[in-house]
Image 1 (tube, rainbow, N blue to C red):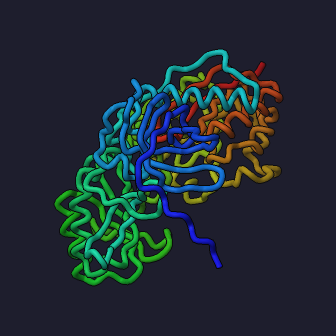
Image 2: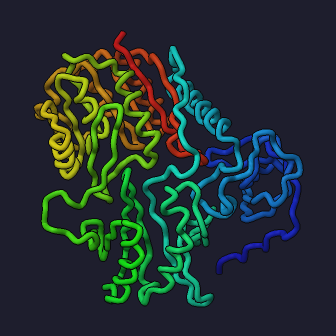
Image 3: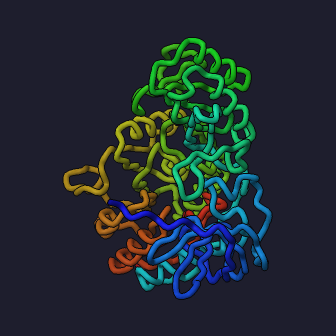
Length: 446
């Protein structure tokens, strides 16, 4: 028989916050035991309530800030203490960025014993209204006869009841209450688990995941909501391959299910399907790409290799500067998208190849060539397999864009062992109000 868990104390208790955890919670030590406390910053005295008690550590949530930190600010969103989409809205945005830089410094030192010759100025952008891609849960609660639309609550699987979201693009973030009303009015409200948002520079698309066929009345209600706003409407009855647009109506023309975003610095426009991977922060992306290309120091006669190239986010702008650019990505669909974007921008000096870059590249024609410059933008797992091959490519300069400072640091250690020097590094605030650290590093051949 399972042991009954002791009830949690209901009376708030005091705590002194010593530091911040990797997921943005304050850390207090009480009677030799560590307690992780939401909505608490280092240096603060708080009153908190327990949310979970374990043998080795406890968890809680600050209900009163007795002595606030100088770094504390008023969160821009009314749901910040409930919603799990953000963890640091109560911290000064400049301090958030400084903390992310400290994490990158610590990881480089810990894993590779490294420090760049130069620290790049942090790349910052808007701290609200920045998120152009998101997946939100939908839940009809029969007992209360209400429908929830939003992200998960902090530390549990319940969907937070949100009226607004200040980090989503305003077209959607300020209409969550309307979306909730729309979902609640559908006959199929209990069979719709998810809404996905994708926004280009000019157009918003919604993807409605539904577990059963939607009645005609529900489809019409969705159309009546999206059409006046000019939002593209997609339905998803099964896995991702079943996503299809129902408005605007398809004509059968190739590549018409596309949104677009622009890189003004390179005078290019990239097309993407709403389910494609794209950077969620459009403003940071518009700054990040020219920064990376400037750091690569591309000259007109150079050949450039872009690894983990996706739909050509760096590849297409790089082709404006280089003699030849080769992009490699695991997905054949992304290779097709890359060529589509090359043609859209009148560029012919590109090649795209589909290959799993965690596998041996022996026999791949692109891998048998040398390159002047290399750009790497891998997933969280990093690019260790490709990093080990860098000497064969002969590039004098490598720019590594990372979404995980731990794997960047690991790969940086490998690059330095292979004869490269860590010239510069810095952070980019791709996800304000979260502990996610996006960074960029430059390596030069010694």
